[in-house]
Image (tube, rainbow, N blue to C red; front, side, top):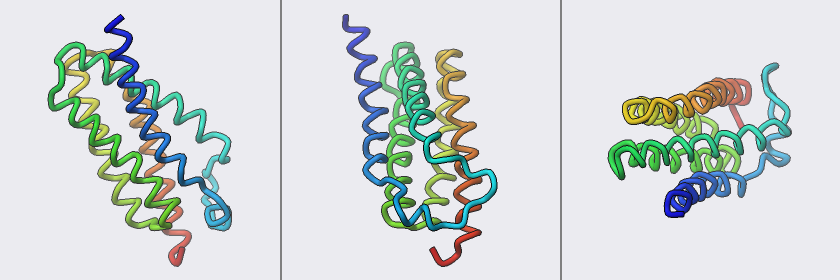
Length: 152
């Protein structure tokens, strides 16, 4: 029972970051931006992020079960903070350049977290790979939106 309760804590933490991000929906401002040709429809984001939050929660839980609270856990928590901050910066404050800096640092933290997870549990590391892929794409998208909308 304790095992599943601890998993629940990691799921709660991951989805808390998602909840914070969801408080800043795209809205009319985002709809008015010039978008690159590879910009996905808004309907893609919620299911993708839901799957990613679940994967990153299970990954963190697996790594935690191997090593307890350590640097890997700290990296995971730090990237969650930057994850939540990005939505506020981009959608809430409309600061595309600052959001780009945030997401670049976020991506570096995700990679560092993934490496740390691989050292503890290979499955945990692999569970983070889709997150790296998606945030890499989101970084390119953020950069393109900033470039296409210099006065936004």
